[in-house]
Length: 115
Image (cartoon, rainbow, N blue to C red; front, side, top):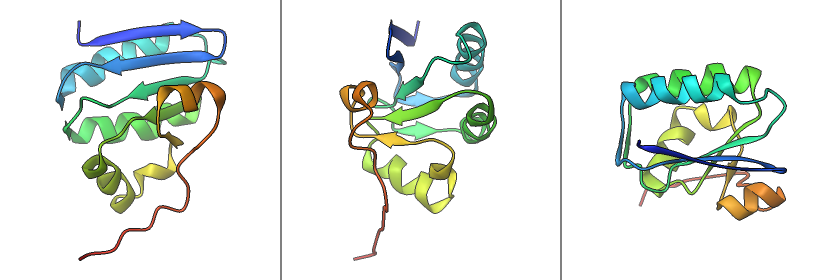
């Protein structure tokens, strides 16, 4: 499976073990999120992901309405993409899984400049 789940009393971390986040993985994510309790904080670890599909952006927007969803360990290209498309407003972004579990070091006020 391309998704691993680590759950404890503070939250659940779903790690995606794929460089490309495809429609199939988004479908699996939706299925997993529906099985988890609605009050459990959930983080998606995107450390290995280099490419995301449009369906993931819609998934992020829709899921953030009903679940406490966060993102962790984003690569800089994905962080810029989410910022430019304003999808970074739908879920808090943490530097690491530990930061998510401790609710520390959330990325705020991201500003980018072209060189």
